[in-house]
Amino acid sequence: MHTLSIYEARRWLLEKKISSVELTQCFLDRIHRYSHLNAYITLSEEQALASAKKSDERIAAGSSTGELDGIPLAIKDLFLTKGVRTTAGSKILHNFIPPFESTVSQKLLDAGAVFIGKTNMDEFAMGSANITSHYGNVINPWSQGDKKLVPGGSSGGSAAAVSGHLCVAATGSDTGGSVRQPAAFCGIIGLKPTYGRCSRYGMVAFASSLDQAGPMTKTVRDAAIFLQVISGHDPKDSTSSPESVPDFASFVGKTVEKMKIGVPKEYFLEGMSSEIEDAWKKGMDIMRDAGAKIIEISLPHSKYALPAYYIISPAEASANLARYDGLRYGFRAENIKTLIEMYEKTREEGFGDEVKRRILVGTYVLSAGYYDAYYTKALQVQKLIKRDFTEAFKKVDIIMTPTTPSSAFAIGEEPKDPVSMYLNDVLTVTANIAGLPGISVPICLDKLNRPLGLQFIAPKFREDLLIQHGYILEQNASFPTLREIA
Image (cartoon, rainbow, N blue to C red; front, side):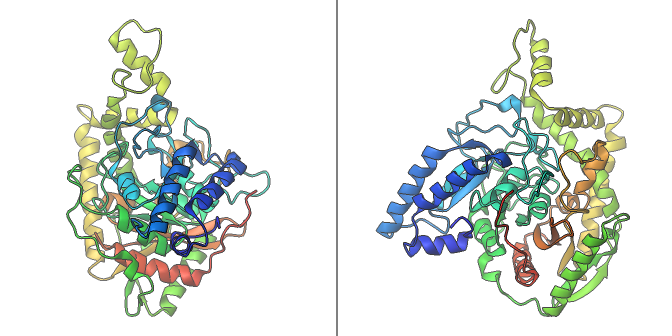
């Protein structure tokens, strides 16, 4: 039963083939059996089983609350969960117990979901490999032999948990590709909604103008079901959109005949693996055979998206992370004599190297004399990138690209130069910079048996197009489900 999708598990529960308690216990047993994957930071075993029991009672009484009633989910550890530790992968929040629930997790609870635990992640969502967490590296379930592969980041724990069947589905968050990139590395579905589609209330902030919650699932249909639950306007979040929420699942199986799919010439990157290009061509053939038309387009400013992102996101991070001072909550350094010393030592001991690096970069680009040279310029580039997409969507309905420039690499073989490491986000950051929705769908395995993914990017609030096209690609790619974990 551990391989069931949301859609399948829901049917089995309603038909009384299994109980939510049995399903939840199955995943808890697997989490302990495959603890070496380090996918979870905190488990909520007693709460999960109690929640599952209540769900079984509702189903037996015919008063089930929603599509996710009784479904065991994992929650990325930057969604605040009332009474359950939330660390954001950092030492500085090691013992933080939130007094309230994030909107996304509350919507899932209202739909009857069972929370198994909080998944591991790059510290404060800063990373592309899940190797910056204070709680240790996450291992990609597709690893073979002695080579332990990274799961991607920052939602690497969620991706590993879904891929390794340690939950039915999970929440992720995407600031520069942190849902889609780990989804590609782990061979699952990762959907980043339009900025504003899902509330950010109760999410530990990294870069407020870019962060967006999203589902990480086994199938495109599941992503549609999950997205339906977590979408909608939230008065607690001033950036939350009042845009109406369509029935996403109704777009599963819709034809793509006569649809125009754009392929940006700028995404044929220098040095890109030939296997990535072949996978992209395979995706084009699948969509062409389904009746869609493939059209070459240009996104001329996309090459500036990564440098713009690594100015805007650290700038916002430096402001957001100023709240971690040892005074109000979280970790506080010991043996301190002055207030300034408390700030300095708490941050020095509480933050990891990557977080410190980005705070320094962000503070620098916002400082007097550099603000206009860096931050203002990055915002001007952002406008140009948005304009490129606006022009492209006048010619095509949707855009298809590879999700990542390579498959998952082994832990210890990652680039040691931070800038080289940042290139993992080169194909995903454009959607964040432009505030657009994107989905990663697994397409094939490379010659080393590592998953490769393709990405669709749609106009704002057209997640329906992502579901429609993603489903066709998924059904025809015949990507293998991971059965055994090394």
